[in-house]
Image 1: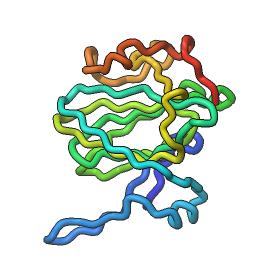
Image 2 (image 1 turned 120 degrees about the horizontal axis):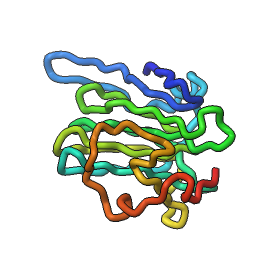
Image 3 (image 1 turned 30 degrees about the horizontal axis):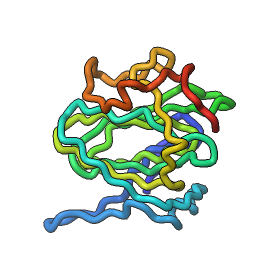
Image 4 (image 1 turned 60 degrees about the horizontal axis):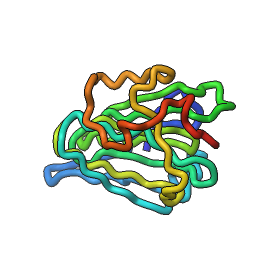
Length: 181
C-alpha cells in the first residue's frame, strides 16, 4: 500500500498494490498490520455499502459529532466518484480546507479520512457502488451535515444542480452547523 500525502494532517489517499494477470486482479483493500507499520492505528467496526443509480448524485457533506465522530476508509467499487473531505477541526491549521480525489473501480484508490472531517461524494457515472469502513458506529443523534455548496468552504464540485436527498437540500452552512470535535 502506498500513502499519498494530501497536505492535510492525517488525511491520506491510499493506492493499494494490485496484482493482475490474464485471469483478472487481486488486491488487499485493508491490512491492519501494514497500516500500523505506517503509523496509522484504526480499529474499524462497521462496513457500509451504498448504491447511487444516476450520475450527478451528491451525498454529503456528512459527519458525526462528539464522541460518535468517525474515521472512514472509503472506496468506489463500481463506477467513479469525486470524493471530498473537509477539515472541521477548529484547532487545525487547515480548518475549512478540503481535498478531493477521483475514486473509481478502475483506479482502486481509497481515501483515509480521520475523525473531525465532513465527507461527501459526487457520482461521475451511473450505477455507482461505494463502500466504507468506519471506526465508530452510526449514531443518528450525532449525525450532522453541511450544505454541499457552502460558500465558506467553496468545494469545487464541478456541477451546478446535483441530485440531492431532502436531508442534504436542507443542510445548514458550516457557520450554522453544530460542529463539535
